[in-house]
Structures are given as structure tokens and as C-alpha cells.
Length: 94
Image (cartoon, rainbow, N blue to C red; front, side, top):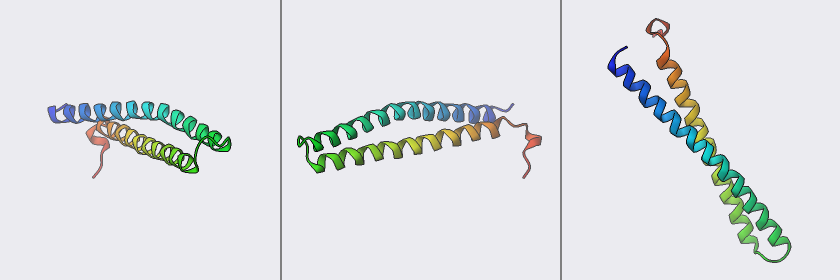
């Protein structure tokens, strides 16, 4: 295997590991953001928070979810790249 190919595989492996770490972190953030949004809605119903607070908490939860989707896509792309890089040269047709 050529040095360049090994470098590409190492780079793709690092990219995949970082993306998977972000996905794991994002899952925790999603759970927290959803809890905050639910609590803000409860506080609004009880008169302890404004509608603005509820909308901001829900917007933040959506932003966290959007980041999760982006990071998940990055992980899938890096995984696909690794699979392609691992193929023998004869398996790759122009």
C-alpha cells in the first residue's frame, strides 16, 4: 500500500472518529435541549415564564437537532470514504 493511500485512510479514520464523537455529544445535547424546552413550556403554563422564553428554548432545541443531523451526515460520509479507500484498486472502475 502506498504512503499516500495510508495517509488518506488515516485522515478518513480521524474524520470519522471526530464525527462520531460529535454525534455522541449531540445526542446528549438534544436530550438536554428538549428537557429545557419542556420545562420552559411548563413554566409558561404556570405563568413563570414568557412566551418568548418558550420560543427561544424550542428554537435552540431545533438548532441542536440540525447540528446533530449535519454531524451524522459527516459520519456517514467519512464511513463511506473509508469503505471506498479500503477497496482493492481492481474493484474501483473509472
